[in-house]
Length: 299
Image (tube, rainbow, N blue to C red):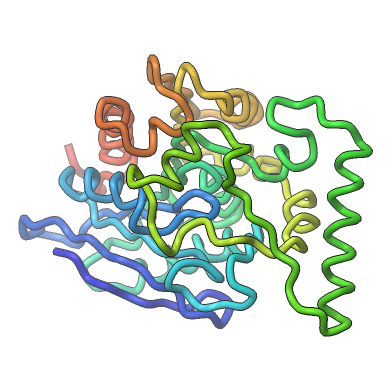
């Protein structure tokens, strides 16, 4: 069953899609919140994973982040990491209030940038009983250090100067300074996913306000990742993913129980929608959530 829903996050109405298993449940469902990549929307990879997990017996909730997709918020396209974490917590709150969901059996899955936001939210939101990521990305690390590291302090400072100039321009009434972030300068597979029929959606990858930059640079997804324990953490990466080092470092900083799974041959983006790689990821996710969101007393 598919239900279009809305729920509040810091006073903004978020647009979501709730999927419920077809088979009647003898008790409220376990549930998984699924977060989309930066600049993405709920209809893309998040819905692919939600659809697989609902077939495994979980209620799943996908939603557009505040300022993005069909959700409320101005300026449009804003990527505020702290708001994104609040959105995850709001989604958990929405599920917790439903009669058909067991509030004690809610997990969360983050894909790409949400693979940073979901663990960040879970560090202090104990209602999230199991945490998983696919192709996790920490935008703060990438903006501060560059993808793979090696970005100079001067480059980081230049980004912060651009953000400050954009804020000043807004204060002067000069409008929102924006920039495209998926152009032909990014890697070919990312461009293909977002800008061709493979994964394109008209509400996705809208130009983001330049003042995003200071918020993102200030943010650290995994600073307190140890606080997730004793709840379990599962992070899934592709063997050919240029972002895999982010998950490896996060797992190293986390406390037990924790697990890193490497999908052979997968890239960062192929784990979004390539059936072979999504199937391999879900083969890990479904039993992970089944084990850790099991009903008390279940065999």
